[in-house]
Image 1: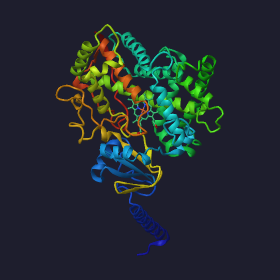
Image 2: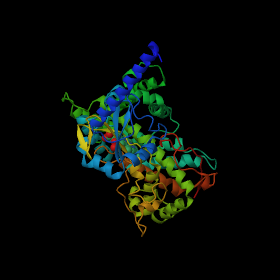
Image 3: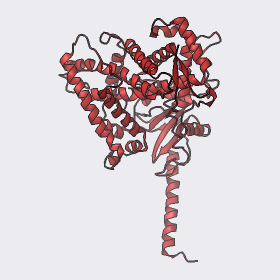
Image 4: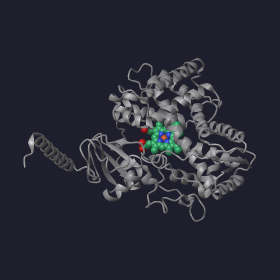
Length: 494
Ligand code: HEM
């Protein structure tokens, strides 16, 4: 049988490709990377990892490949850490290697390497330390952070009350309240919920957030340089960033006119003071670009996370009215109706504390964590991890680790209560991750969730037009576990 010229070329190509794949796989195996599903050049492990249910599919794969495994995004390996023991061992015991962030192309093309979330080295260290101190500094201006949240919780309650008995989707109200807390910390003022400037700021942030998590955002993430030349909605990210910069610049100019260096009112004042202190240092990290980067980080990292947690919390309490009732009993006993909930109340409210922990564990809103990177070649649990490899702590596998939680997939506040009804901590409670790179806003977020939730339950019974058994509290399917369900509720004054 004659093959002909076309047949010969085709056969040669197939044999070459086959040999190439075999050699490539052999080379990979010789590198002793963590095990993982079969991979192909260029395509990586795309056939084995779901793009719409990624966190769950990775947990499933780990049953076959173990707690340290590697998948391939194109030709690049990505190490996945599964379960509490492994995540803690990497991020805490090997923090010298796994504290870095990777994907510097994206960071530098979109955020120009400024700010905290995506930066590394001295810049990250200085800005993180400065921001933590400023956030922790309860004496900032005349009012502490707790007081600012209480004030916002009051406006949130009024906004809920204005809906009367009409069912409404709480998403926007929660987002407005949480954003205003950050505005109050950063700019020293909260905005009216109808304020035009505030609306513009939020819509710019919201649009950027939606773009960055959309397929266009993924394109920008994977091909940051090339994708800036491709037409598409992702280019709005840069336009929005410019507008946001104008907004912050204007705020800085206004602050400069009224600043009292002995009494900083907010984050911008504190940063301006630091800029003045370091004005003779040519290498200072305290300049406008880093101030802007850090402010954007606080908004980005703080708004969707905290407001989504609160959105999940209300839905879970609609599903379990007996749990809401028990929290209200505790509120009546410890706080009563004559004063607002305060942070000091939390230690006297073990049931409420346990429910909030369980809501965060169950809601699992950052299931894949934020990727880290290896800052040098290293050997971890017997496998080689080359410098700059992306390392992803799979937080969902920690929050639902069967070794640490009796019924990981069930909502049950008893995960955080002992037999006597006292609050019981669990080391695998890591919604904010762990180690030197863990969430910088953890303290703030925990205050917001406690104060806003207790304030709402002090004033209202939460109601739904649906029967509890018809309410679905797991995230939207096919959205990688990060999109919460939409629902309606109404409130009945207590
Ligand atoms: C329920 C609310 C929140 C959750 C679940 C959450 C979760 C997380 C997680 C998982 C990380 C990644 C940690 C890592 O890389 O290992 C992170 C980082 C971060 N979060 Fe949060 N976060 C929340 C609220 C906030 C708030 C309110 C702020 C500030 C206003 C904030 C600021 C940050 C920053 C700046 C980082 C980057 C830290 C760094 O790279 O050093 N977060 N957060």
